[in-house]
Image: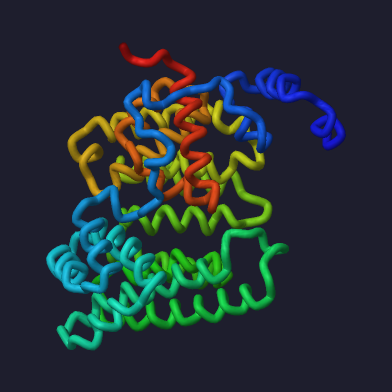
Length: 356
């Protein structure tokens, strides 16, 4: 195959790729190939590639404002958001995730908040725990384990231990808050928690918020790290959760995403198409289309629809996402997140003529 790639022309490679999947962008398969079909997504009402952003905070304006202020050194909007929204666990999880990333980049604003002595210890602690989680992954980088240095690995592990300790402290400061338990679920993969340890943390999260969306998302990621990946375990967890609430309908699509490297035929599975239909129905409802996780649901639905050869149905989702190329599944591609997002937009547009 390597020899063929070295001798074949671009046209020959594109023809071969399109024999396998006529809708795929060849540039996504072989770096250096031109985009074909050449698609200008602006014809479908989407912004150009240079306008795309991976900023996690932008999809929810109130979170975006707090993060922008924090990055500028002002902790007060973050304090106000977390105080006013206490008890809205979905909003709190999203805010802590985005604020944690900001503090992982620069902790000065969080230190200033702590020094102000406002009595917001329960909020500061949970952001600090998530900030250390973000910092750990930033120290490690996006490369494969074999391309990660011993120094990076050691820094990653030490910082994850600090994150775990901070999260445990946060559970003591706010016993009713599921958010630090969600942080512990999120770092479970990096810490290599065994089944019993993970199950104990999961029970604590469930006791406080049985339908915790972010917790379910990262719990499924933990399960997907099994070797070999258990198809039955992934889909049993995803389908059970999706049956409990439409807020968790995306999990079946996430399960397929986690399994596709083992068998790309997963996207032809009838259960995936049923899940996509359910997710689209949820997004069409006022609660699903306007909630704090609406952007995330659109991202999962768009990825799933294109992968399942239903690209035309993804066009309005990409149009609604606009410049938002943040979050999963795109962020799982590391530095290539924007390229993959843009490629999927093009594949969706290629499946339907532009509006007149």
